[in-house]
Amino acid sequence: MSAADSLLLLLLFAAAAGLGWYFARRSLRAPAPAGRAQVSAEYFQGLNYLLNEEPDKALEVFIRMVDLDADTVDTHFALGALFRKRGETERAIKVHQNLVARPDLPREARARALNELAEDYFKAGLFDRAEQVYGQLARGAVRRELGLLGLVRIYELQRDWEQAIGAMDQLASTSGRAGGETVAHYCCELAQEAVGRGDLLAARHWLKRAQGADRQGVRGAMMRAQVAQLEGDHRLAVRLYEQALERDGGFLVDVLPELRRSYAELGKAGEFGHWLEAALAKHPEWRPGVAFAAIADGGFDDPTTRQCIVDFVASNPILTEILEMLRPTLASDGGRDAAIRRISRAMQRIARASPRYRCNVCGFSGNTLYWQCPSCRTWGATRPVTKFRFEAMLDPRAVPRESGPNR
Ligand SMILES: [Zn+2]
Image (tube, rainbow, N blue to C red; front, side, top):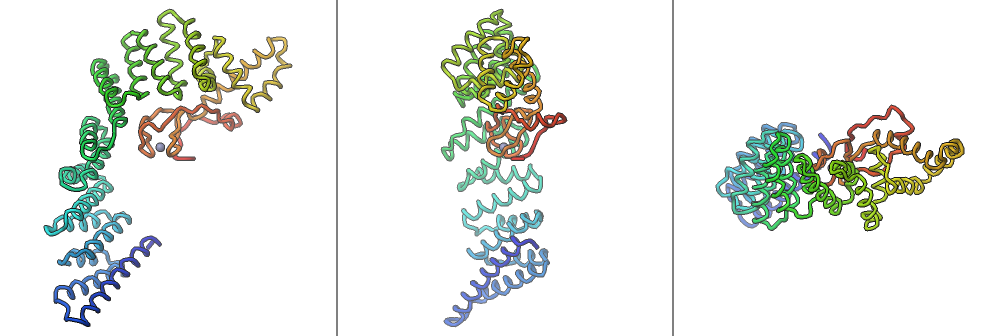
C-alpha cells in the first residue's frame, strides 16, 4: 500500500474515531437510536476490511450502510477516490453508482457523485458511458458546468468538433465562461478536415465561423491565406498572410516562405523585399525571427533579409567568434559575406536537426505544429522555436524527434 493510500486510511480512521466519540457522547446523555448504532458498527467493520486488504468485503459493507448522513456520504466519496486512484475503477464505479442511486441524496452531493462516476468511466476508457453521465449532469440544475466541461473533453478526444462547439456554446451561456478562442480552434479543425478532402467551400464556411468566434486568431488568418493560395488567389493570400503576422509575429518562420511564394506567383518577387523592409521598420523585434526563418528555409537573397542574418550572427557571441575565424580563410572570396553565407548553411543544418515547435505550457516539442498540445491538451500554446540548439551541432547524428514535457 502506498504512503498516499495509508494516509487516506488514516483520515478515514480519524473520521471514524470522531463518529465514535460523537456516539459515545450521545450515549452518555440518552440511549443512541438503534439505526445510528448500527451505522457506527458497520462503519468500523468496513474499515477493518479495508485495513485487512479485503476491498470487496469493505465495499459490500459500505454500500449496505443505509443511513447516508453527511459523514457517511463523505466516506463514500473518499472510498471512491481511493479506489480510482489505485486503478480499481470497477470498485470506484460501484461506490459512485450507489451514491447516485440514493433518492435522498442532496442535490449538490448528487451532482458531485455524477461527476465522480463520469470520471471513473472516463478513466476506464468507457467514453460512451462517461458521455452519458456528463450529459445527465449538464442537463441538471446544479454544477452544470462540470458536465459541460466533461463533455468538451470527450468530444475533443473523439475529434467531434461540431459537438464540442455546441458544448462550449452552452458553457458560455451557463457560466459566462468565454471560450471564443477554443471554439475558433474547433472551427479551424473542421476547416482543416474540409481542406483535406478538397472541399474548399466548406473550409471557407468554417473559417468564417472561426473569425466570428475569435476576430484576432492567428490560426484562422493563416488558414484563410492557405485556402486563398489553393484557390489561386495570391493577391488575397498576400493580404491575409500579412494580416496573420500583424496578429502574431511569432509565426514568421511558418508564414514568410508562403508569403514570398505568393509574391513570386504574382510575378512580384521584388515587392516582397520592399514589404519586408517596411514591416521591419514598424516591427524591429521581428529581425531575429526573419533571420531564423530565412536560414531555416534556405532563401536569403534580398538585402533586407541578409542584413537581418548579419545582425543575428553579430548578436550571438559563438557565431561572431566563428565569423572571425572564417574571415581570413575566405578573404579571397568576398570575406565577410562569404563567411556569413557559410555560417548560414551550417545553421540551416542545425535548424533542421532541432525541434521546430515547443509548447510554452508543458515544454512538449517536436516538428509538427499541433494547435492543441498532445501532452497537456492546451490550445494555442505551441509556438515555433526561433532559437538554435547549439548542442545539435556537436552531435551530427542528432535527428529531429518529438520529446515529452520539459525533457
Ligand atoms: Zn503542452
